[in-house]
Image 1 (cartoon, rainbow, N blue to C red):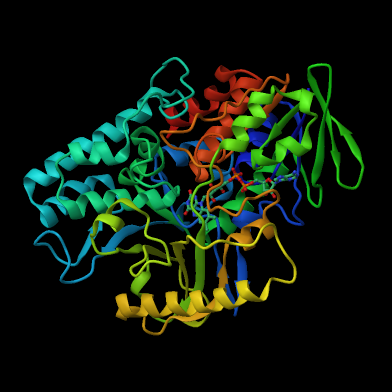
Image 2 (spheres, protein in one colour):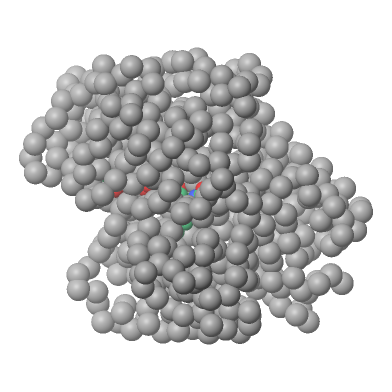
Length: 493
Ligand SMILES: Cc1cc2nc3c(=O)[nH]c(=O)nc-3n(C[C@H](O)[C@H](O)[C@H](O)COP(=O)(O)OP(=O)(O)OC[C@H]3O[C@@H](n4cnc5c(N)ncnc54)[C@H](O)[C@@H]3O)c2cc1C
């Protein structure tokens, strides 16, 4: 079999590595001029800024993500010393907090500190209820052999029927502030708590209670390690290779056509881009009309406004900071956008770089209505809005976090930036939404040897992409073959 993987994000790289490990001839095609454009980040004013990776759950020794990085051979090119723990800090508005606790609360970076930290802030009963909830989250991960290496259990692709995160939190009898701290992680996959499935949240947000780590150099370091692993495995990554057509013979995928007109044949293909493109990439007869209709009806996850700045202060060092909106009926249930009086903003920071300066990334959901596509030059009204929104966000951060009064604005990104750099992107932060109302896409399709993988198919995040890749390769070759390496790594760890 010769496989073409479309897209060189973490999903495409993971899928290609898993296939290469099985001796399959594999190549990656990427539309962008560089591999893994989302993880690459960019430079401003002598600082490197991360775009697609700041922290990961399960990166501790023996943790789920660490095991998968090892199974893929990526860990061979990462330095153990470059991993650092990240704790989460929550800044509530003083005077409008809901419990008699401090205006600043936190979750530790490691599970073994969780009980003591929560007890100290919210008392013993709240801590007991909370730990029960966290154990329920961890139990969800025991349902798939791709997330639990130590038990031989049958394959379950979906997380099954699940209550919403909102209902689960309501039943958990937590202090309001603790409940809001937990649901703030919905910002990690762009779904509001009422629509977030508890099972999916457990995978994306819950695992951060196991452990939360950054890697020095962030996405850039991860990307370099993955590219070295690909080189070692003999996988080529061809850039400036946008796929304009996926061809088929009878009911089999047969190859792709690039926008240059070049045709490349294959006997298997894994597509990792936004599935919204498929209607234009395939003949109408390649799939059932219901498939295209379903994709057309799927919603995207949240849109965001990203601010990139620098500070000389180590205040954000090894921490993710959430600026929490006050608890009104409206903000309690929503990911309060930048347009609201008190937006939800989270801030991340890499290790110190040039002359002791720290690069800061601040992310806020936005409800702004953006122009269609990727218009060049940008419309004047949009540029004006962007300028005002940056000034407002910077001011809001400085007011709510006086420790960052020296924060200097260096650049901003909007959904238009994502559309510009990531081929086929709709501009949403995490691609297609995964929620209680939406039927997820399946890795196998009606077209033989054509598979779907990535954040749009399973769940977002580095772990979501890797496990989605593993599932797609499992369906394409054999689940046992894929899981063998994962289990071996777990036994050796
Ligand atoms: C600002 C930001 C911060 C984030 N922070 C974190 C974090 O801290 N931790 C975490 O775990 N996750 C984080 N994420 C999420 C994570 O980065 C993504 O979920 C993950 O990288 C998605 O990987 P992917 O391979 O599925 O998709 P992508 O990286 O989007 O890869 C798809 C690739 O396919 C290419 N492509 C698409 N169509 C075509 C075509 N027709 N022909 C050729 N190529 C094509 C695209 O150019 C793209 O490179 C963050 C995301 C963002 C935007």
